Length: 377
Image 1 (cartoon, one colour):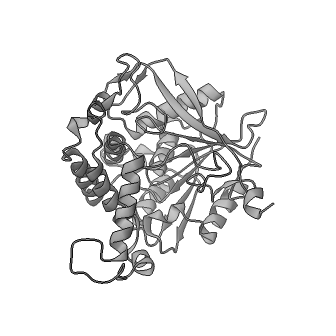
Image 2 (spheres, helix red, strand yellow; image 1 turned 60 degrees about the horizontal axis):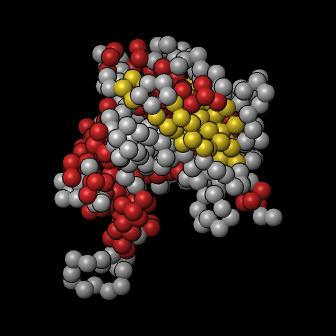
Image 3 (cartoon, one colour; image 1 turned 90 degrees about the vertical axis):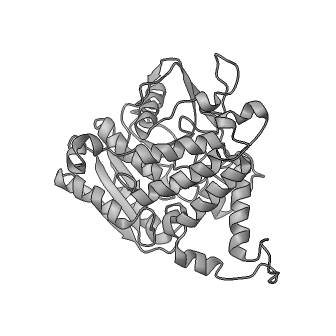
């Protein structure tokens, strides 16, 4: 048996939780009912005190670790972190991953069937926020009989959810790990999101969000959106090291693929367009834009975090220019202003924003050290 198999959560299966109680969203709309798809790894202890919630980023989902079959080529998106004796040790913790509302991997979203019309929700599915996600996640914990989380963990948009958990449910979270994240988006980040959305919305196959009825997919828009995203997720050094100015075959003086970088971007765009729903992408990026816990406090993040009780680990990466270390330090300062217990690590890494997904030994050692110190009662 290989070391990888010994440290794997093994074969996993998604589960679905149905909620018939209405959920009132931040924008005032009401979801009369909804489903959340989730996976669990490890064993919930008798006191139900060892649960850790994983909050996914923009294109993530519930499948964070393990495989669905031995023949699967790829494991869950954070498999390098989660498992027996890994940094997030499933011998100690009961780990929960879920697909957020408006997702496209089984939870209620634009591409799922509206039980009233028996047709896909399409454009009628409401715009959701980070606050809505956290409230729906709290419903899932209630469903599982879990009153308190040992920890909530997330990177990027997932980190915003982890932060929001400590604000909305201060008595239900012991620890929060906020990784490669920010308390809100900069204007530049919002601009990237808008360009990506416009690529989708202006695609002739978009049909104002109801492309399902036309048996269409706004593939070109999704491709461009994903290509733009990948440019911002990688650092210049990472791009240079991986691709440089390498020519794919030989220079042809055309607008076809000439360089390795172009080949990579087109591959990622095509792959994403075949797997991800455009309406979900629009809603995920909007949730990023809208999140700003300090907004209701006159821009004062310290005041926004005044009721937080959790202990924190905040991690940033030196090459992450989309969610720079300065943004993480804003969170750290506001937490310290409230005399909360905070550990902060700024990791030297070349991978840019994507570094939070990488099996970097130093980064994982930091997470492991923090998680090992969490006491389970």
